[in-house]
Length: 376
Ligand code: HOC
Image 1 (cartoon, rainbow, N blue to C red):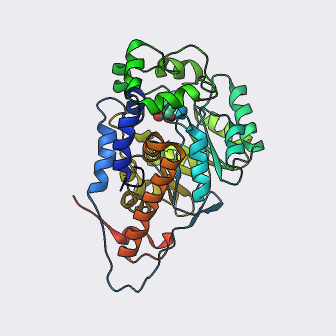
Image 2 (tube, rainbow, N blue to C red):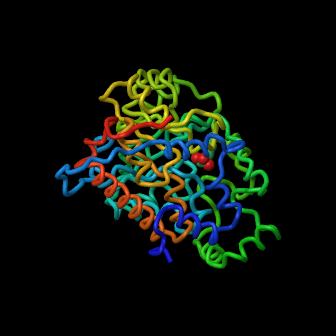
């Protein structure tokens, strides 16, 4: 069935069938009325990719470098929380698929496998660690040290989450982490026997870094993380982490300039998939002004709204050096574990390749503003 999925939307359809509502909606949903999340996808529909004819480019090379090391494709896997809630293979499946494809895998602070487990699952793969700042600074420090010791080469410091966004689908579903076994959740899961089987046969039903007590996301998040985070904290993390450091969640030129001044090597232009501030600007639209602000040398990664290879190509043309996929890979994971993630990567890579060939782009460096047009 996975082989029959012709694009990420098809994987989403399979994922929806196979995953309990609360887990699917946690991934698929966003903050508030989901205005930002919806626009983030729609904006790509108004970008024209310009074809070139008789360009003599027989092959397109999809490889690139990001954060000082190679990646076989111009996209990697974004950090996502509670990933074993989507499929029991969780971060192990995701990191193995990324390793196989030769692209970076990002582990979230809210991951459901430890830094060391992911390092053991994908020893040859590039691994990035995403940091939220704990109220107890020692916890953040220890995580950063463990990530460095385990060979993670890049730190993504997420800064758009002083508090949890208001995710209305989660509220309506009564979503709790770890999942609560109520009549409603058991019934819902019973329609998805595979998920249920996977869930019960995982080695542990507990989720890393969390207590045994089920709670809703805002309660968990707001009790763990520091909402008073400021640029001083960023400078402190910069001193702790010797590898590449990207500040994730930048959408304005002012913040881009400040992050650069605080010592960031790069930025992730992102609205957190529309999951934090509904009505926040659209990452794709912020790209060109952020690029103009920080100059050509600073690396910019973009995420939010990516559902196809054409979206990836558009983002690269608009000023991103690299793209992260969040939901797009999670749909694959929910549809079929590691194999599903591999299928998502394969589909996106093929779409990037075909688009580049039709646009006459021989390499990722060839993708620039001259190859897109924004319809008003
Ligand atoms: C304050 C931290 O990234 C998501 C994840 C986890 C959110 C944690 C918020 O659901 O978007």
